[in-house]
Structures are given as C-alpha cells and as structure tokens.
Image (cartoon, rainbow, N blue to C red; front, top):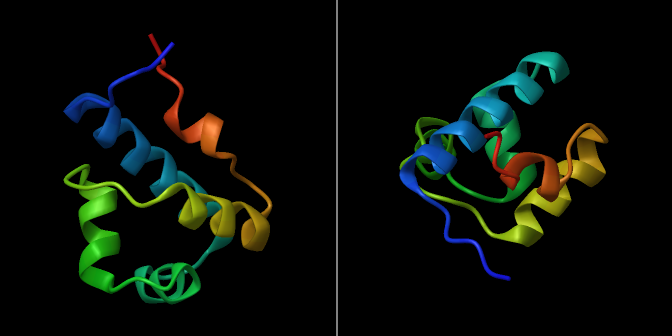
Length: 77
C-alpha cells in the first residue's frame, strides 16, 4: 500500500518538527546544521513547503531521540 503525501501532510510534519525543536530547545540553525541542510531548506520543511529525505529524519531521531519517521509521516485523521 502506498501513500501520497499531501500539502496538508507536509504542513503537519512541519508542525511536528517544530514541536520537537521546541522540546530540544534548539535554534533553526542548530537543527539545520544537525541535518546537514541549509536554514532555508529547514524553514521550508517547517512551513510545509518541502520535505526532507528519510535519512534526514533518521538523523533527527538519532540525535534527539524524540522522533520517528513514522511518527512524523503517519496521517492524523
């Protein structure tokens, strides 16, 4: 079964990443650096404009221990 990620999904993922960032008390720059992406790309993720790759989500999980790819991408409805 495949699932196509919608604009609403991207926005939800961005909101969840914001929550994780807040809990970790890290800046956008710190998270972007951790992920190996630019602040611009990270800002786009937070706004639900673009997506990062699964390996970046896994890096976020390893470094912060607070997130899983499934948690971020599962539909909430």
